[in-house]
Amino acid sequence: MKKSLLVLGPVLLFGCGGSGSTTTGTTVAKQVIASGLNQPMQYKAVPGQPTLAYVVERGGVIKVLVNDAIQATNLINISTLLSTAGEGGLLGMAFDPSFATNRYIYLHFSTGVDVDTTIVRYTINPTFLTASTGSSQPILKISQAPHDNHKGGSINFGGDNLLYVAMGDGGSGNDPLNRSQDKTTLIGKMLRINPTGDDYPTDSDNNYSIPAGNPFLSDTTVRPEIWAFGLRNPFRWNYDSVLGGFLIADVGQDAYEEVSYVGLASGGRNFGWRVREGKHATTNSGPTFGSAFADPFVEYGHSQGRSITGGFVYRGTAFPGLSGRYLVADFVLDGFWAVPVTLSGGEANSVLIPSQTPISGGLNGVVSIDPDANGEAVVTELSAGTVSRLVPALTP
Image (cartoon, rainbow, N blue to C red; front, side, top):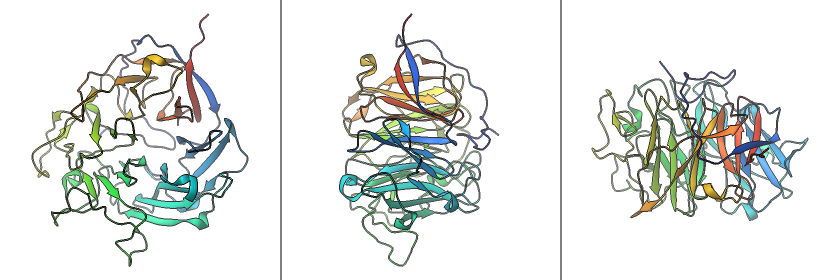
């Protein structure tokens, strides 16, 4: 059985994928920002602080970069609080919409023998260089027994200033408990919560409120946190403020990798797993939550890659020809795709995956593509232990 994302420590790739290595005409190289990192997972430019960035490491440390230089003092170290079993660890972070004034960050990490999903808020000090574990405020905890994979990764705020958490199906093959279609569990769903409220005052692990606009509030048989159904392992995804919606890269199992676009006002969708993978029916049975499934706007088969790593819509200046395209990579490949994204009636137009753009020197286990303070692309390579900025390759 092939798992989906990556088993970390040491890294195990989930099969060998072919590479569509035809160039798009853009010549790209890597400019290493930081090396010697311990399983880096994500690079995050600090809002309002153009010289600062943070690098999330899977083991629970967040490094500080000042003008691309690693600082001797870490932002925070929560290594004693988390589990790195299976696909666990510190998987993602998000900045509060009011970060400039409250300096809140939200961390997504795994805890316990069941690699439970845990979201905790921390407050960074006024210099933006350190944060204390003593500032922790638990926000959300979700039991993930009995498997230790498919835990998701990214967390993001939408344009509505609410926190979105994309949950994997909890692991094993074919979602054996059919949790992605189960309306009574948060696993395999996109969740939308308000971390400034508290509808669960007697529960110390869960301190959030349910937004009034959540799509299933009129159905008391559905967990009110659920914003969308049918995800397998949405490891890297983001909210794009220009498009006004989410680009959700969902790691496939046997045949297809996929990206869905969902507008901020278009919650309530079912992406289809476990009865569908991409646009295609599987041999898995239901029951399902409803019968209407939302198609991804782009997918690729496992002749082209094996484990999708979602990125962001590029709007930097180094590569004018890529402006407005969604940068997406694959953990087992050494290049990336620049996918055109156009909307009609609030929906992304379906496109074929374009030719892959190679990178001079290749990629080695890319787990994140994020914008720097200037909107340029930074790739995080877990296998190489590096973060690097993509730059135009020098011509002889």
